Length: 421
Length: 124
Image (cartoon, rainbow over all chains, first blue to last red; front, side, top):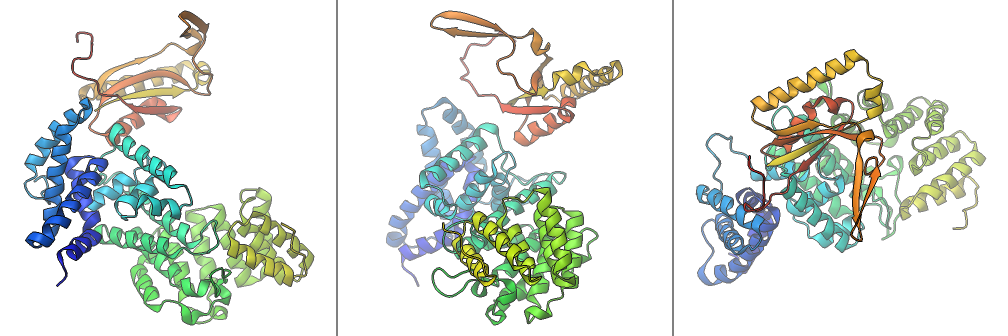
């Protein structure tokens, strides 16, 4: 048995997202919902230890927060708030139970509505990410600011503006209609994957992986699969799990360890449970007529995950998957990875020819991994002088410290001097 | 909620349109307008004369300055508008996407700011 205070903390930790999502539906405003939930929590910290934990702590918190919201709105001085208060009181009076759903609607988890509101395409992508992490992830504003390396005041301002836009522009709080659902689900997946990548390939800073951000993205991915088990939602979760499974093997020892390439990783350190879970999620998805982009990327990660040793990798299968990916969802980064896979399957010369063509087009001119991949193929071909030049170019573009350490080591290996900056 | 759907497009493009193109555009607008009148979304809407007919007015230090032309020289110009009633932004953007001008230009969707009930208004 835990004490009253511990119960409050546990319920809050486990249920905050659900409670907040329901409150937002009831009061129609994220700010009002957040503030009244904070007041309800204060009340719980006083009442539960004194009077005992209620039978249904979540319902208690929702009811208490709802009452706080009504009080707050009655006090509201602004015309707009007063008008909303009247509408809201009517809505609150109708909602007899916290989970009440209008009879004509299918019961929907309020968190699903909230995901679609936070990831609405009329919000800037940075705002979508921040709102999703703040409301569904339950991260504090300072934590989100740290994750995205912006000052806390900037992040706070971003959240304020996003919430104001939701209110003023009338961004709805509901799961989109079936005709718009595919595009809107893509937007949600993009936000979750962006969060994951921010943690997985930290664009700057000293550590190549910021694990807590990856974990947060995986948690959101699981939540989405639980609420809406669409094929691409499952595939995204699989892709994140299969990538995250390599986290311990991906970074060298020490606080400032350098990034270790896939082929050099100690595969016994891969997380087998995460791999099993990831592979199970994409089982059968490639049989679809047009597999989605996450399904294809997860399948590629799955081939790596199933290779006991780097030299046993089925590169022919990987090339096939990249060919399909490049055909269905073309992008310069996909072309680059495709070229690298071809180099592994049929030799560095053909891979280099494709990378040179990509470099000539200029689309990835600022992307350090293009120069790094080119350098690596030149090194394999024994063209060390050109390789050194390409490593220097990659170094000039790379901002993450562990990427830079790796590139510097390779540059020395091919006999080049490290540039003096 | 009420939303203003501002229709931006390239005026030069319209000048080079053939009579057939114009007729088709006119009909497409007529059909769209009729459909949102019928659905009850339409509050108001008009097309504007080209920006060559525009005059910009500013008052500075009590003096009225009038200049020829639009407020800003841009690639796309404001050519017309609809004022619509929609339940939320999703309904408003769906209406905006059906405006014929959306296929060649852009529609800016702006929520109308709610005003107090006693704010001066013309008689309907």
